[in-house]
Image (cartoon, rainbow, N blue to C red):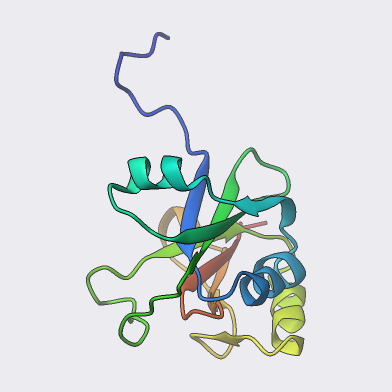
Length: 154
């Protein structure tokens, strides 16, 4: 099979702007078990060119998702600029990232022990269609971002 020019062929990473890189690393590294590949200062000239605007400084962390080629990229800008309250899932501009997980119950216990909250009291069993038998829950990261944790059907 040939790939046409201008075709999306995969996903490398998802990026999130965070208030505190340290707080976010506690959630994504310590809570979810992602592996830190690197943490560095953003090249100001490259950042300005890519974003089309001048931002004083930023740090970036790349975290590897175990068992995949996908990464999560976390940006902490200086100064930190926060917006309104975190958006609810039904509001336009709300976004989320979803991770495949194993043993969702154990992962939820670990996140709870670290003080993180969820949008529901427990994982939800999906009962219809191709997702039947799967479990899912939305955790809330330190900035209010919804992080879906999805255990495939057995």
